[in-house]
Image (cartoon, rainbow, N blue to C red):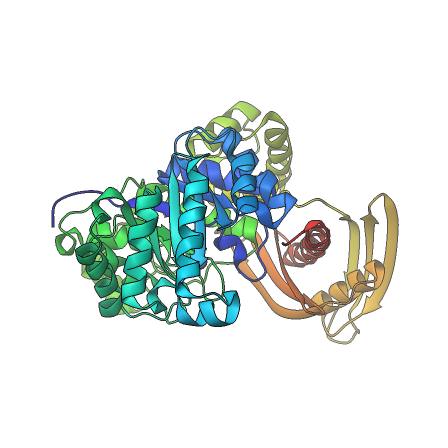
Length: 513
Ligand code: KIV
Ligand code: ZN
């Protein structure tokens, strides 16, 4: 294999946003897009403009501000979808439309009710139409891995002839296994006469936990673009995770002929944290590359080995993916300037207003906590960036609890501009607070998951609470941090009900066609 480069196509803002429970505002997408640009991705798929006015706006916002990567919008093989993508991408310096149409037998027969020839014709027509508006066109035969190989090859050849410069081969339902998926790519490389005129891309879902393995098998067989997401977010079990593919190629270059990517791997941890914070989807602690336990050594033998020689039990240097040891940096005497300089060093570029907000929180924390670590700063900033409109704002809460008293809470909230209050009992102080918030807001949530973890070290550590709550069939997550874990929990619950109201608002605005 000749030494070359694989393009990294990040679809966190499109397929990643299809993660159950995740939803991002245009502003949140922009914050993530800035970090993706710093990370060095080649393409950002910013959304699916035709699905909702919100998504169209998000793609437009990202197009206006992000300069280096190609900005891509998804479209079905229809003129309306392509027109909306064009509209949304108008201001992009390097726009790309990504047109898709399913080709597999099961999709043709049950979903589209179209014969092979009709699919072939519609694909070619869509690409030809897109050609009038875009010079960069990607085409995806959806469910390609379950498509008859001969028919797949015919579609690929025809869309390249019609003007597609990238052809993406999706394993839409994550059904393929590596030998098979690598074989699909190999066959296309051999059988499609004009294959050299397009970049072959892959898009692997993780239903069998094989998204990354399938993507790597495809690269070995000639694919030169991979579609992936930060933290492996995505529809159902998610997409192939960007950080795992990139580090797999970097660490095992010997197995991939030294093929490279443009990713600055030291940015991986930071972007992962930001995506988790803004999407409300926590990263599992044992997640490869960026999970909190990825560089923790519990067993005595391992600790001893690592102290003697790191490589005994650690294949990646934590710093290479952006993990940093806790470092004392700022205290309560530090000024706004020092604060902003340090944030820039950490890669956070805030507007003046955001910086003011973050600095106020920093000062409050510095009064309570003697030592401020980089992680404290990251938590403060990410909280400030989680721009969920505050329909509900916590004004105050009180809770009594003890061995011989029934826990009782009272909570005061601002709902829009109106003060609301309630008090209620519960099985414990946290339960009492949550029940009281339900009573005050008139919402009825069922707690699905609740976690509290220390995000910083020391007795006065900052605790982060995360909640997952079901409001009928809608599940939302909420997160918050404070030095007081009850306060963090109450704020996390309020954050969740604010996400719920945002979700309801977004749903109302959707005009799925
Ligand atoms: O999984 C899939 O097939 C997709 C396509 C739109 C590329 O997301
Ligand atoms: Zn997908």
